[in-house]
Image (cartoon, rainbow, N blue to C red; front, top):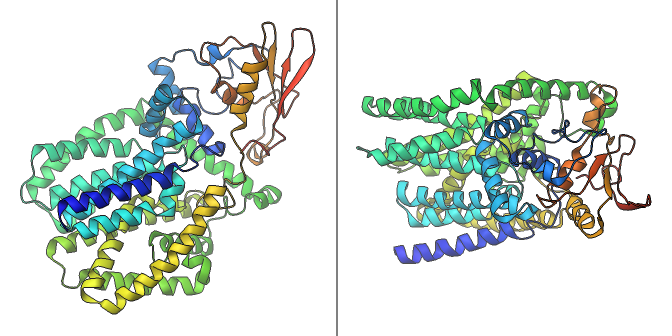
Length: 530
């Protein structure tokens, strides 16, 4: 296939990928995890922050909420966020997008979609430039374009696709270094920058850098490469160590310890544990095995959903047979460079998985053992599956026919997953479902339409969730979550007077100057708090 035709096909694939990722991207309101990140992105100290400003005994305005932040305040917001500096690159990107395009759900989620589309582009470069095959490059990009996991997380204002992109970028430049006889300075600079962005996208991405070290030790061991890589890691380590000791990262372990304690408290409360079953579970070997098999099945386009179909007894057998066939086909008649790429792919797929598995076992809870936390190697899975299909066509025609039939069946399965996703029905990979439009945008619009000088907007405070029930809250404690989220969508220079009602759980009310009240919205418990 000529380069011209290759790039035309790539353009068509990227158009398909873009369509799938942006379709209905702003239709459904932001859910709880998205709210956390968005608040940090605009420098507002996470959900529940700004309590000195938004207290029941005070009034505040959107102008107060949007007061320009100092660098110290932005760092503080990042530090005290639920991610404790764990998603810095993504949060900065959302901050920029918010300033350029506004804070609509579609705008802030677009960051995730764009980084995932860039990942597809780099999957193409891995196939084309490292495996030297236009066909593998195009098929790998196509498989990634229809991967349900990528599509789902491209429509969330969360950091997963961002961290996957930068870890893929880092691995691409790492392989260019270790697979080349001589590497220029530009490649080392690109690698250094990419590992800095990787580690500041998600702390768990250090497992990819660990893979790089293991691979060099096993498959390279050239002294000149080692010296240059050490320089790259020292340059990366300087800002990272400062971040972890002086900056927001110092709160990371505190947050993890606090979250683990909270989850264990919920597990120890039978009534709460029942409502969080499937999310907060005991990390027994049985539970770890079942979820582990489910995760590994979902890595591969040919076995995605096999655990749901066959269960935990048959699915492992199917998985072992499939992985064995893939390894045999790809290793057979492969060149030394191809064998190295196969080894590297195995590392970036397995090491993050094993780390998450061991971490969950040590913590005693399953909350850190999900596909999204082990997915850094997923772009290389797309490359491997494309390489597997192409090689099967070349050497094993009967196997290629079987693979084609499985892909046809899987395309129907993927279509069902996406149908549920676009309808926000109960769906794979995420617990959010049955949402309507963002209620806080609707409340903000009603305020802008109905507010007059002398009025006061009054927000609820005492809404309870399973998490808040598990915490012994001090007397007089209050929530300002709803007030924060409404202000996110109000004009930055507005002077609407607002306050918190400590005794109201759900209703946002406009108190008119003439003492009458207008109900702006009833959040009805968890109904509209997605």
